[in-house]
Image (cartoon, rainbow, N blue to C red):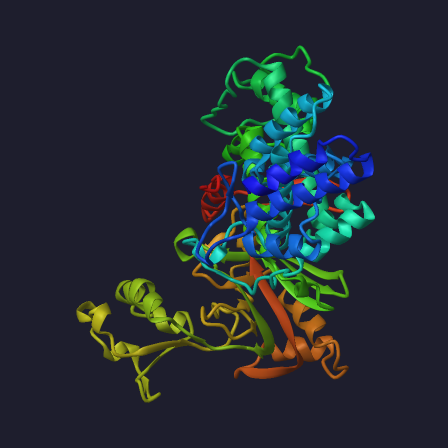
Length: 560
């Protein structure tokens, strides 16, 4: 190293050395400095530059080796415009839900300032500074590309199970950077690492808008975001002390153009603005201010920024192949199923999902068959906690519910022959099976996609539950509001399955299994924020408390 610098000073700065020769010598010396920064003495060694741990030691070495250690972000001792563009992209990473400090932003800013000061003083270029910033910008690109391609957080390291196949890693980040530098297309290249779903850019724009609201909050108020409280629902023309604050909140979010002088009266103009907020947060836009609406009103820009960041990360985990020509998507946080063919949504249906303590898992599987007029073999846990206590209270319970009591060998036992007062739920030797019919807990049809969680989609006799906003009510399986319409679409390839035949099959005395002619991907996931094609953003309550763990992991700075 000392010898190389000595050669530089003896020859580059000696009289008679031409400008062109000096430029070549400068680039050569800069290449030597870059190589010294990234070369490792052993595979176990973790390289650091200016106290910053390099994320991509192997890829970064391959990148510079292929270009004979020529600097990527400067020429003739000056930073290229692309270097400033890369710094800008690092700062913009917050709109992807990332922490820009993960990508060396602070030290890069410091090095830029020092290099600019050098440039303005007409001093010779500081090659040591240039080599450091070159390596850090390259490492930032590799790291950002990786995080955009696969996500920063490893879902397998979280407490909440994520059993959806992730994207395969992109292994050619060095080649992609080389192409971007040659073509001068850094922004285009970085966007190419986004998830291939068009919704991602709209969601990213939505997060940017939330940051704008955060800036607006700072500029317009010196007080903390005031928590709104109500003790009972507020309806049109009611008066309440919280109405002035509610009006301010609606005005802040752009749902109310101007503040009126009606004081504490909940008037029609305010109600129209409130309905827009209710739509954004997935509530029935009835204009009634209940506890769910108050929860939405109390969400701060920081709250919504966190929620948006988490869901952008979830989208990065999803494999690109879920855009297959046929797909069933269930968003448990939105209580909704979408059946998609060739990117066209053919059916949208409300669903009921698992309660908080019976949360529906996140996973993918393949639907392969339907069962019309299904029987229901009651799980042991439900038999113990619900069926036996009910039978103890009502001797006629099994008849009313059209249930049978079976031995392990399948022999039917008369429920009235048991002394239910002496039955121990922990030692109950029988299986409970509910026969097909209108009362069957699985309804009139179930849709099967075999998986280790024993979760499936089915009809339900409890139709009234679909009017509820919070539909986390089941034991984990997914109840669908439109079972007939769903079955009709799935069987549309076979003209023999007419409407009448499907309806008849749903009301038989015995169950009937129908194999589909193909396997349809089913993805059950959890999205509490998204945007539509028009850029409208939507938020949902984190019913399973899954967001915070991901957000904390996203915001955690890498340890150097």
